[in-house]
Length: 142
Image 1 (spheres, rainbow, N blue to C red):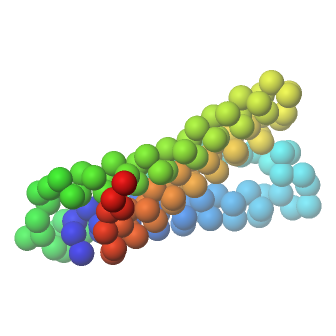
Image 2 (image 1 turned 90 degrees about the horizontal axis):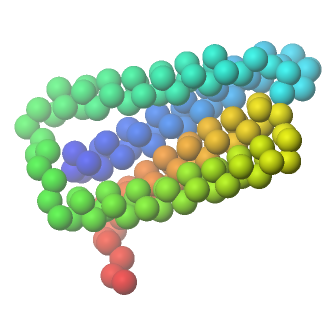
């Protein structure tokens, strides 16, 4: 497994765990009330920050555990990274358009913020899954 494939796995797992933790905290705070009444901003920011820190620490840990791993990026790794990023970015666009439409329709800020966060997570997951699958198989020939 290459260094970049390990990084893709780390980011994929951290994205899923971070969003799951966010949902769990929101659900525990709801207590039968509507979700839009739950204070979410602090939890969202802490969850995103913790996911970023966890990803960085996991990548540092991986580099320490496997110090001799080749970190040189060849053309194959660049192509896989580019493909994964392009596939994942579709959800960033979907989230932006959805948030814009929700704002124009006058939806509550809770839902707008959460659709953006969900689409960022889906972007990370879809991009990560694409990278892992392509590392396991091969780049598609267009």
